[in-house]
Image (cartoon, rainbow, N blue to C red; front, side, top):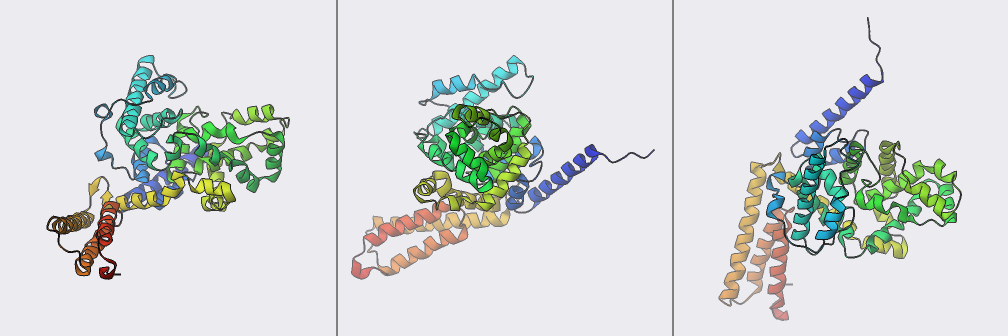
Length: 408
């Protein structure tokens, strides 16, 4: 008897095809980050936790072999009490059906992870919702991985959330309605008439939707897209979610409290896969650069740390990807790295000799320093330490020259 091909068979084949594409991108030398970012917005994303444990660190340029144990990093910080309060409210919605002992262990590990992170970065401020992002990382992988990923996110994607005030976030939310207007003017006009403010989606953006989604696989799917895209992607996804619910919103009484309640209650059966795809199209139609050109409000967006640092962050990730392949250094890239350190050492020796022996800084000696500095930049453009150090030394040397002796 011949079996008919049904929907389950098609789903399995689509999943297998997606896994094959992901494996192909991971096995490329270097890892094909562009393909991984593209696949994150296609149906299924990174498919399962095993793939996510491999891909998420690659997308952030994190070398998991260098990850540190949290219990060795814990120390005092200003937010210990708030961390305890938030962690004690976690792990109720997911994972489902866990025992009390397992929940207690997860909370203990999460507290340790957050305390290690905040003790290491005392200049950063904890915000309510950071524990939910860390919890997803920990449930997908382990405590060490969660800490390493959180540290990298703090440098770019969530840097503005960790500032002393929420002003950067409120400035960001002002662009929610203009984004909605580009997709559905009728819905936009309705929201404006109701007087509702975009603060209803604050928790969506701050927690990458973990606060309003009860399914761990769905949250992980959202993380696939957020980790692969621009730091403003959660805002685009919030706009896509509101547009997807246009019928529910337009059937509501056009009044602040009614509209706010409708928008704030995200239905559990919402199609987040379609939401991610819509957000991906929206960010292509209205890229963040276009938002930055929107007058005074656009200037506020442009000043966000995540916006200013994203291009450099991506370059650093790609450079690390060139150096590191499957957790081990390639011999060719290790050679380039060795040359960079050699050039830095020679530059250091030259300047130290000149300072110690009070050697006159002539145009000729400065030219040699410039060559060494350029070598530091050329052999490894992805590692900014040599470039930054070389330029700083050159500036200090050039300042001490009389104007008549300056090589330029």
